[in-house]
Image (cartoon, rainbow, N blue to C red):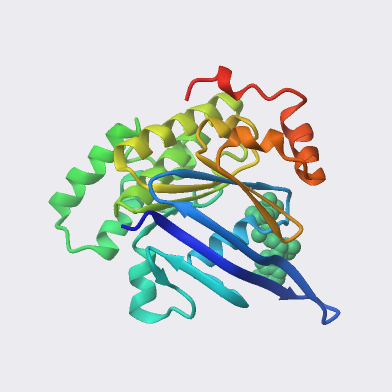
Length: 261
Ligand SMILES: Nc1ncnc2c1ncn2[C@@H]1O[C@H](COP(=O)(O)OP(=O)(O)OP(=O)(O)O)[C@@H](O)[C@H]1O
Ligand SMILES: [Mg+2]
């Protein structure tokens, strides 16, 4: 795989408003997601974080500019190429989106049953192995309603990891979880990433907690994207909206060096 997992070049994305005018969500943004690293996408509500993920997954198309995934331009991608593109991604949306009528085992096995030709014996072995890794062994016959919030997230993560994705997208993976569980989920991400080596993109409001995980941070504001090669660099920005962001989310003194990765 190339060094850059994803490249956005002059990407413009807008939506038509009810009055016929256009709302610009991404105003010709440029950024690179380095392969094998963790990029955190931050920014206020409605600033285009989820839209950015949807563009990467080709669930939406940009108005102009290009989006390159693994060296290939995905503009206008359809059919078999789109299907193939999606197999490279693992996606964990908010709420984990497990199927309520299926057990944990069946939820996790689903991508293998749908997308591979593995036998049930092979599937069983692989699913139980990942459930073991994510400390869910013994819960495989439970239904989502019988799980705690953190267990649901872990089951969602197990499912997202089945096809061994090159790129993991997490959209606010800890929303609604308590601080202890939030910390556990992030530690789990760090461990799993070490194990699998995927590129990860995490949309999160957990600032600065999430910075322990981040190699790069992207802040979205009013259609503009600011890219920081490390979380530490955010505090040195001279831009007013970034300074405000730092003050409201991190307080006056940012002490990330005190926290071990
Ligand atoms: N399909 C759509 N049609 C029209 N407008 C949309 C569509 N999807 C998103 N938008 C608009 O684009 C803007 C960015 O939305 P997005 O979902 O990316 O926000 P976000 O940064 O993820 O916010 P949050 O933190 O609340 O999840 C919002 O103003 C939203 O209303
Ligand atoms: Mg969102």
